[in-house]
Amino acid sequence: MPTPRSVEAEVFAVGADGAIALLGGYSPSSGRFHFPLGEVCPYTGTDDVEPVELSQRATLWGWTAVTSAPPGYTGTVPYGFGVVELVHEQLRIVTRLTEADPEQLAFGDSMRLVADVIARDDDGSEIVTWAFTPVADSIRASGTPS
Image 1 (cartoon, rainbow, N blue to C red):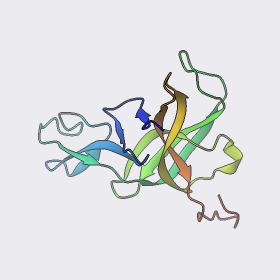
Image 2: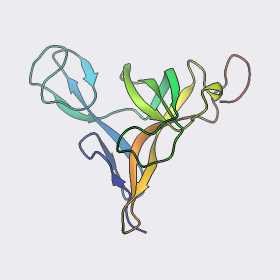
Image 3: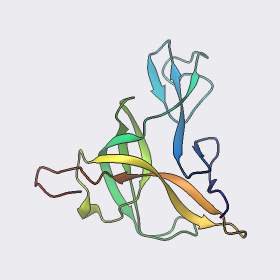
Image 4: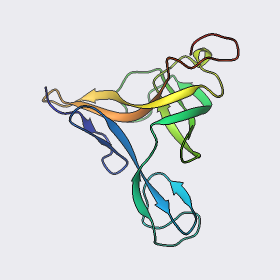
């Protein structure tokens, strides 16, 4: 089977095994991370940015469901969309979520980075984007698994 292909190679990388990594930056002058990777620090404007692979674990901050396909999008709807905070970097990013039902999510849910198939090439290669999915062992205040 062909290797999955990233829909946006400058933003994230997909390995031959399907593993995924967000490509961000770290600026020693600000001591902060940013995403996506940029040549200058968005906080200080300095050009001391070091490319880094960002955390694969996150906490859910906000979410909704996309129920109508955006222009040019040929994948399935509905799909989840939200904001997560990367655990190590304490950086909030806007992201696709694998859970499309908002009722199944709660503030503070543990999430992990995954490749999410949105289409296939003519040769059958999966075209993937990054997304976050609930961690199976995440327990909400209500006591139910997320």
